[in-house]
Length: 345
Image (cartoon, rainbow, N blue to C red):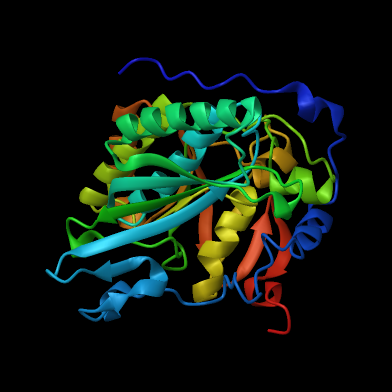
């Protein structure tokens, strides 16, 4: 395999003093509407779908359902507004990568995608630039991930009565599940299971909820991203699921590694004990949203086989920690118990 090269890191993080109190960041971000653990649209505490108890009809709310011919299908929708006005191609590639990665982590195979550009006036040059770049990004990412694209490529919506609004791209992705016995979820499974990160950590907080909500910096470069790394990562995760070497998989998404773990632990009331990387700033390690990274759960009895396989891939990976009965610990510091992270729990 060719050497995998990630994008260079931005110097933006060097301009921000690293906060010393991670607890303060966590509890500030807990009220971020995009990360709030319990609100009408975003409840991390909900069980979600249970593979063992799924009926033949499935559950459309989970994004996994059964079609009329009995085939199990998956569906996901994602939106992105960062940098459409200056780098629409990369922004679109990031968005499609996120959608495909989420499906892969469920054991689904992404098949088709459609895109919708909202608040975009294609009658002016800037709108045409965004539309052209987004189209290139859609085509390139679809080729990398083996996706069919809807015939009309990208649909548009513009209404001057909305006033000045940032352009937003929304994608819908469909996939199929080749083997219902290979469906996995993001949820942590058992106390004592090992937690690994696949992918490289970066001193990168660009375009993160942490940067925008905690530091109130709304404009920053795109996060570290390399579409070749993403495509290869997806292939590796497929193999891990096929070989039954992992029991859970979760993309590191909104809120970074910490909130991705929180989303994995809350539905089942399990916590995590993790160790950060001394070479990476702790705020970037916990809350940065660089692409190309996954959290996976590995049973103790599969750890050797998991490590042996990962060493053949040449992808960076490392032991993050283990699943606990409910306590959250970072570098031997307790952050309390996961059930207390839910307001009024």
